[in-house]
Figure 1 (cartoon, helix red, strand yellow):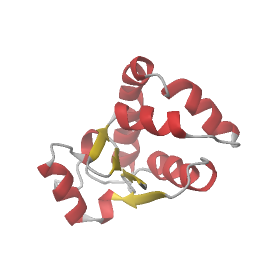
Figure 2 (cartoon, rainbow, N blue to C red):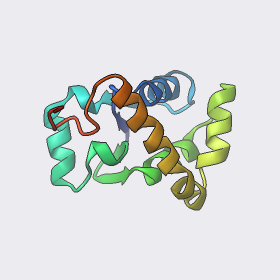
Figure 3 (cartoon, rainbow, N blue to C red):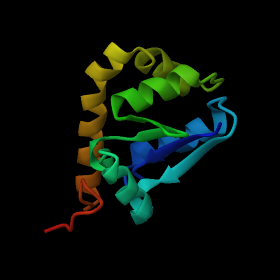
Length: 127
């Protein structure tokens, strides 16, 4: 069964991590989707209780992980040769540690989106 990572393409950190995971993460058939660019996908995720503004989503069939759980599950499955992904895997593969560190990732995302003039939630207009 294929694995799909839905990330916020407006965030340079998220985009870099997602693309690097796809290219060098060692996960066969990992599909990467930019949730900011796909409104219908975001709406489906919201119906399932997952808001892209609150974190990335990892999908495998009917199973879904959101936020820190998504990053923990993804990093556990990685077999990276890339040094940055090796570091991230060691930091985030543990659920408790991922839960503790994930708010820092959300803060970095929020700051980078603000600097780019983008709303934190892709479904909200910037005022």
